[in-house]
Amino acid sequence: MTPETLDCGHPPSPHDESTTGYASNSQGKRYCYECAAEMDRDAIRAGKPITAYLSKAPSDSMYNFEVSTWPGVQLGYAWITSEYPVRNSAWGNEILCVRARLQAGEGLWREYYGRGFGEGMVINLRPCKVKVTT
Image (cartoon, rainbow, N blue to C red):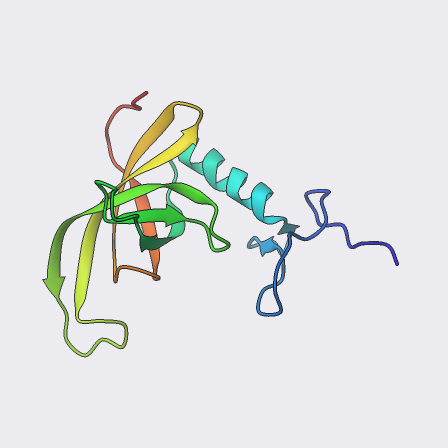
């Protein structure tokens, strides 16, 4: 049996029964997890908004969260800048405002900001209007 080839030219990424091994874009094209992460890095380099996930940072980290893709490819770090309460939410009772430092490439980082419900949750991040730092 010939392994399936995705639109990126690679086979699906290793995965378990609850995932597919690929990411899909709005045009229905399918990409392995590493190629999808590289597309996120391209968006970071271009200063475009991205959708990512927050996970708890290691206890020795100066940041509150790690920022990653759905399958867990790390893109950078985030820290809480403020919080405010919300009522009648199914996901939690506080919205966190975060700043994030996302890696666009070797030694190239961009600052982002967003709001979300914290650990394990999706977050939409938008670029800050600051210069690229190295």
